[in-house]
Image (cartoon, rainbow, N blue to C red; front, side):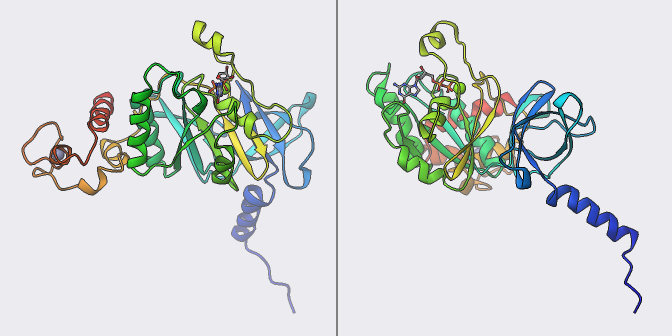
Length: 318
Ligand SMILES: Nc1nc2c(ncn2[C@@H]2O[C@H](COP(=O)(O)OP(=O)(O)O)[C@@H](O)[C@H]2O)c(=O)[nH]1
Ligand SMILES: [Mg+2]
Ligand SMILES: [Zn+2]
């Protein structure tokens, strides 16, 4: 019997699939300008991390991207292809353009602390972005050991209650004395998680506290932070911990939402969703028109004035 021949199209498809799935042999764990650090996985797992360039036809790669690389000259590898991302955490950089910060993640930990005191609007910006990207948010109050020493413990307490009442999971932890870390570990189990938040809240310290052996991430000195606003984490970095992966990210000063549509912002406020379409006017701007469902919900005490103020601020910034 004649052997069944595969069509050219079928052969191409097989080659392409192999390129993208079977031969993925590394994960980007960090990047420095034009160079990326790739950790071998699959058959080469356990081998040394390799500094790589990427082929110029590839999109900008980020921590968490799964790639195919081959050895190049001078010990610098070349990344040939990248697997389609199953998810991405991104921030906008200028009109319409977004900058991916981490790929193939499940959870975003929004880390806040009593010191520096959280900026409510920043938390809401993160939450809107996370909701619109379809990722799972978890809010972490780190430095729980300093809760009563901060400038406004009552404001902090109210802020925490507000997010809990909205239904967000919010864990109180301390990288210094270990409070809440077991509970946090169980949330992270089996997932890849990126830590985001203001500089100095203790993201890198948390990575280290959750780690099993040596100190991993670089921690900024709090006195330096207060005096000069310096922060030591300058690039995102992926760490493997026991049963989960963490991506530490550098502190960012601003988190704009230029890439999100006004409707996504509305939907990103989870308590507004059920009010969608309930305003008297279809094109209601929710800025005081008669019959506005947001306004009546506010009057009934069903939505928090801080969240509404935050919503207006974000809408105005688009
Ligand atoms: N008291 C206290 N200090 C902490 C805690 N976690 C971190 N810090 C301190 O906060 C400062 C900033 O920490 P770092 O991890 O660099 O913050 P990052 O910029 O978010 O990565 C360092 O001086 C840490 O020692 C904590 O749970 N409690
Ligand atoms: Mg850091
Ligand atoms: Zn309205």
